[in-house]
Length: 151
Image (tube, rainbow, N blue to C red; front, side, top):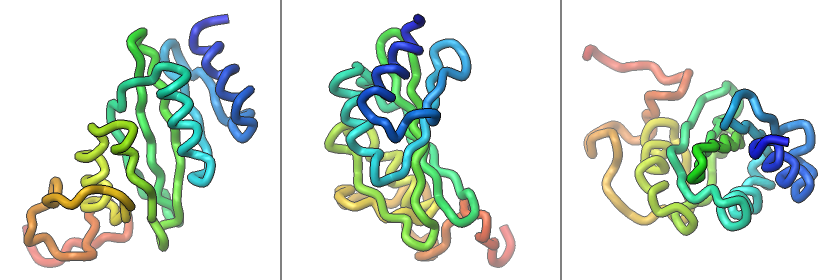
């Protein structure tokens, strides 16, 4: 059994919601998908028990009715765990993970500005990457966003 397969086994034994939804797609790359309601205990377990101490990035994606989040975690042996979760586009509320990964601050600000997420617990700060005068409620990475005027 490879290190990656051992991690998948440990995750699926601990969290049965991951059965059939966690797989090794290529060497050192594990992919998992979970409903947002089940996400946080899995993230905490990955960091505290499996040693995924680095949050490389958070990727947000408009999937139509849902907004997806991909949390890309890694550990010292170069294995990456990619956890996909999602919320509905009409209520895109998530909780910050800066209490576990302080580096999530910038990525979470991007989710707010570019896709319209509401990140509960995210400390006040400047907008990123959009300018302060960008129109409120305009989220340029949403599929239904239409540019107004000329560039």
